[in-house]
Image 1 (cartoon, rainbow, N blue to C red):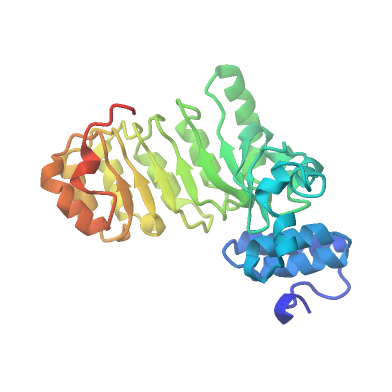
Image 2 (cartoon, rainbow, N blue to C red):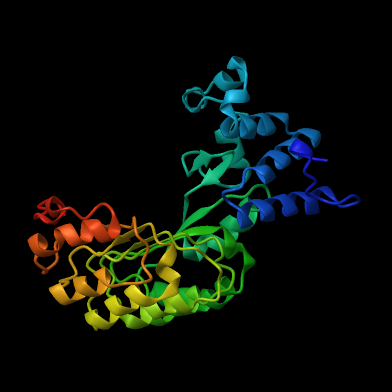
Length: 312
């Protein structure tokens, strides 16, 4: 029996398969702490008591003693008090820089990786713990693009993609076909954020996200300066596709959205209420729509939000 009496792995399994089962359980249920705490019990039983203590201290700080909280304080680790055993040593053991990512609820999150290096980095990391990644898509330079295309098929077919929480690209980083191929992977189950500022997109981009077979629940979509082709159709897709019903944040800054585009967003029966919408720098009339947007989406849409942003 594991933490709080919850069994997670069966009898007779090997330590490697046990570890894999815990990692899969945590990645498949990122908001559930039970599997994390059971994994902590398992780690303690298999010779990693410092790691187990750290996980528990992050998840249940109120239950930890003063000495345990002090040992596992992030500032203390940065100062080197427990650097060898804590964050720095664990990152090094899985081939990740000591400054990469952040430990949240016991495990590394938001580790940045270029897509062309993802399989190698994630393969090492996920053999040890349920790391989650921010994947950057490659630059559009011809040589790199050729290499990326050769690599893409292997990437799309990899179950390691379940550890990708965010896809990000800038400055025309990847062609529409490449993105559509990637987002069609059934393994992107942990995807929560997509950010493509300044990357020209079309309705096919939004449709590809909507039709992806991966069971991800998208929470943030940032398309600033990106809606450049068939704008009205793109906005209609955003407002109607069931995939976007889980969004918590939608950023559409500087896309020349008109009054008609805003009406489509306001009339959406799919986009959630209490959705943080950022519409700064567009062409609609803010004084006419500011109040309606605030009432429809709950916050982030007051008239003051639509004033010119000189720092953008």
